[in-house]
Length: 308
Ligand SMILES: [Zn+2]
Image (cartoon, rainbow, N blue to C red; front, top):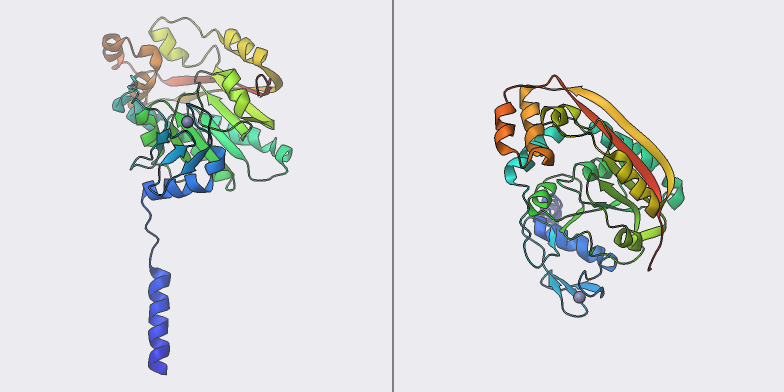
C-alpha cells in the first residue's frame, strides 16, 4: 500500500514538474486560436479560423501562416524594407539605454487616465507600426490583462519584437489592409509611423481611443542641425490628424538626454533622416554630441467614423 502511495506520489511529482515546453510557434498558434474572432482576412474581409495545422484560413480560402519565430505573416510577398538588421540593432540599443522610456511612461499614464471608459475590463490594444515592440512591451507589463497586438511591414522589426517577454500577437501586415474585424480595438497606437485614418477608424471600438505620436519641432535637433535639415513641420501632421478625429487631449513630451559616442552612432544609424546620406553619416560619427533632444507631440482622440 505504502509502495503504491509512493509510486502515485512519484508520478504526480513527475507530472507537476514537467515543464510545459511550447515553442514560440505553438504559443502563437494557441494565442491566435484563443483570439480567432478578432481577425478578418486582409484580402476579402472574410472571417478567419485556425486550421489543425495551425494556419489562419479565411472563409474564401486565403491562407496565412505562423512563422517559426512566432508571428503571423499576412503579406503574401515578403516586403523588403530598407530597415536592415544593423538599423534594428541600433534601435534596440537606443531603447535599451532608456532614451525613449519617458515616452513609454507617458503612454502608460495616458492609457491609465482613460481606463474607466472600458469599466476596467481587459482591453484590446494595437500598435500600428510597432517596430521592435518596445512600447507595446512596456504597456503590456503595466496592464497585465490587456490583449496586446502589434503589426509592422518590416519582417526584421517583427522578428525583433518576438524577443520581448510579454506575450502578444505580432504580425507582418499592411496598415492600409489591417487583418482585424470592425470595431475591435479599445486603443490604437500610431507612434512615429504613417497613418491611414479610414482603416484605423474601421477597427476602433466606439468607446476606443487613438493615440498619435509625431515629432515636435525640436525632435532630434542635434542630428537635424548636423545634417542641415529643416525643423519638423509639426503643424502639418497635427492639423491633418485633427481633421480626422475628435481631439480629447494633447500632450507634449520634451526632454534632453546625455549621450555617449556609441549612443550618438546608434542614433545616426537608426534615423531615417540620415539613411540616404551614408557617407556623410559615417564621416560625422567621430563627433559625438553631448545630448539629444526628444520632442514629441502626443494627441489623444477618437477617430471620426466613415464607412463602418
Ligand atoms: Zn480572404
